[in-house]
Length: 263
Image (cartoon, rainbow, N blue to C red; front, side, top):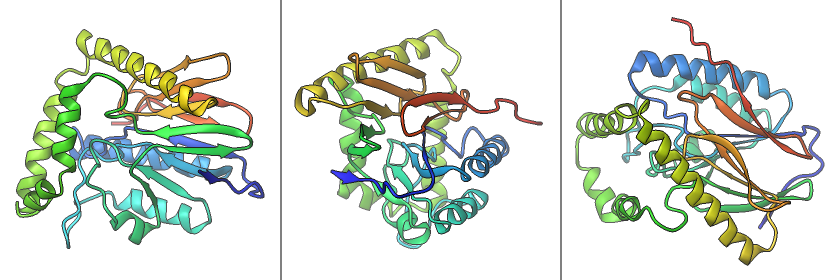
């Protein structure tokens, strides 16, 4: 288990998830990206660390010599923040599961592939994207094994990047935006919250104590009490909620950024 640097003069730790940059189209995604950079500019003054808890991009695949086009402003801002001494972490989600080592080598982002337990100011955190955790959701777990297969990754690399990216974004837009305002979407989120809440209870049996479980994936911003001393924070997203969590050294609070996007 990793321990934090208690001598850091900056106090706050920020958590954000499910930005899904790249959809539904370039123009709309760029508006959200600019708003996100504005948020990063504001938090860098007191940020001790920043955690992206998965699905920063809606599709990310690293070929041997090619990466997805775009995100120049975002990468520039992240480089500035990291070079100033603020660690930035990325948990691979189900949409950026194919992030290998480019972001680590080029930007010095810490890439995490599995859940992480970490202590901050004598508070214990369980950090994960949230996909594939807990009982149920067998259909997705089957697909995840396909996506994580080294053979399938190798085969996908032989598809021309323009074609592979078009295919991935086409299916992504259908699954994400076709149902974004439907009742079934909300019901699915609530089931996801329940599934991950039960998963948190299972972890507590093994770990005895976790102060905060922080995860993304569900897109519903909510804080759920697991026990009197343990809370599960579902981070929401940067698609419709523009939500994030911040740990001030004592407590974790779920917050919402400016929701207005200029034309």
